[in-house]
Image (cartoon, rainbow, N blue to C red):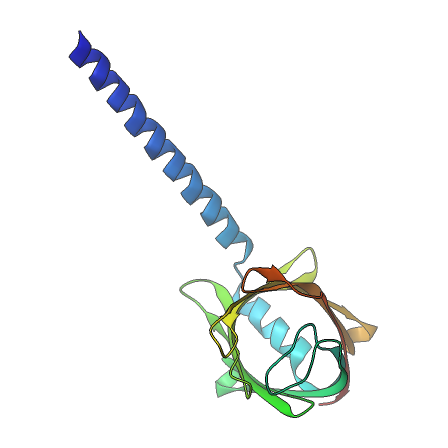
Length: 189
């Protein structure tokens, strides 16, 4: 009888572990599905981004090679569709710093992905997706000294695509920094 009780408890325990693992996996898959995009979404994002931009940017923290927290700068970005429409190349200049990015569609993961590297040594990896009519950007990466960056941003597009407002939250080394509140205006193709 004790062996039967032990076996029953063990089986119940295994079932609970397996069920909770499946549930976590299902929740994670649901999260991934929310972040999935089509190639048509990627083309739409490229069209929304391509061109030359001028931005009103406030540094949300001290960015090595760029400036100090609270500094307001005029920044410039340029986005070009390349490689037969499979890549969006981006260039950012703000204060004394610069950044280069590449955005692409990963058909296997069904995601729009991006990677940015700055002259200050920071690196950002993004998953970009559209939800409820807005473009969302989930970022992970690190600053030059290795502290992790995590952010969740939303791009609000208005004025027939000529104005982009980025807002959202950023954590560096697990600590919340000032919110993103950048405004970009298209100045040319």
